[in-house]
Amino acid sequence: MVKILFVCHGNICRSPMAEFIMKKLVCDAGLKGEFEINSCAVSYEEAGNGIYPPAQQEMRRRGIPFASHRAVRAEAGDYDKYDLFVVMDSSNVRNLTRIFGGDDDGKIHKLLEYTGQVRDVTDPWYSRQFDVAFDDIYAGCEALLLRLTDKSACK
Image (cartoon, rainbow, N blue to C red; front, side, top):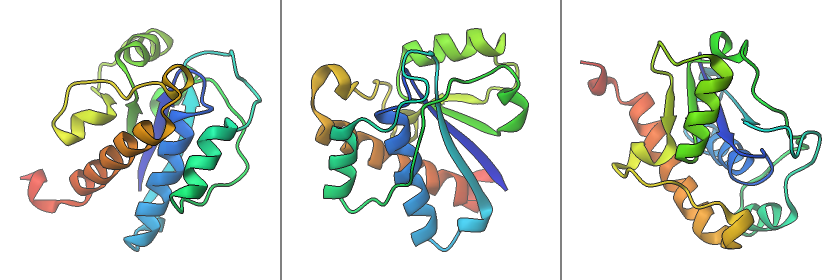
């Protein structure tokens, strides 16, 4: 089982969108039992809050089902619990590395790396462009799933 934790600043926009997009992609591919997928924040700012309503609206508009969600912050012990930490931007990389006290196993990766891009997923909290963030996240999740299920990539 591959355990993935999606990470953004507050865990109310980008990382929960990634969590539920990835869960749908995995389910649609018939691979539900092969993955554990969750999300978290690098800050306590939104701890306990649900998915931001515009993010919910965008997922509904795009046909992505989602469940009840409450924002949580990453903890040092998460490093040993997950195989992969997929972050939305460079700030998340720095903050998550600080929380974990390093990344000796190379588990932290930016989502858009999987699409061959080095840029960040724009934060829709500031940009208000939930559709643009959704498109980036969806493309990243598709590419990530392909990478994780492509047996030839392991050679």
